[in-house]
Every structure is written in C-alpha cells, then in structure tokens.
Length: 87
Image 1 (spheres, rainbow, N blue to C red):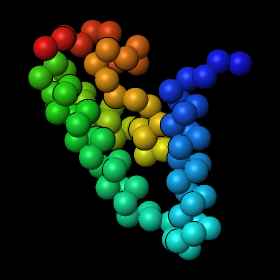
Image 2: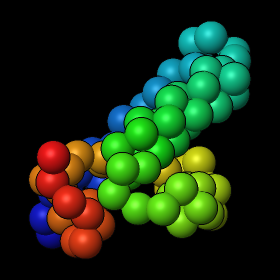
Image 3: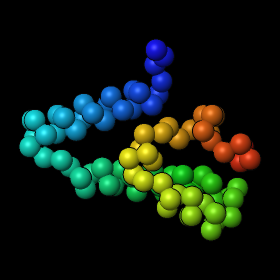
Image 4: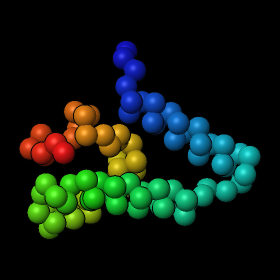
C-alpha cells in the first residue's frame, strides 16, 4: 500500500473534523465553506489566462467541495491540465 497526498489530506480532514466534534462540539461548516471558496478563487485565477472563462467557470462549478478540498492544486502536479500553458 502506497502513501499519497490524497490519503494524507483525507487523514488530516478526518482528524480535524473529529477534533472539532469531540473537543469543540462544533462542525465549523462556515470555515470549511470559506476554504473551498478560496480554493476556487485560486484555481480560477490560475486558469483564466489559459482557458476561456466560460470553460473555467463550468469546470469549477461542477466540482463538489469535498473533492475540491481533497486534491492538491499545484502547477507541477499530475492533475494540472495537460493543455495548460506554464507561466
């Protein structure tokens, strides 16, 4: 079994949610929503010069927040679009 960034992110998310529930008695839904909005802004900003705005918006809006927060966003990561121009 191999360790991946996805597994690390999943384990971190599980720890944070469990901690919030046990220690703080709170889910911090708003904080997680803000993190997702910030991630969408960063992705949109990075891709707007490389792809049409309508394509970027459609792609970002099709992602659910759980998936969006589970993937790393780095230009050198294999999940970065292959057709994207490097800056």
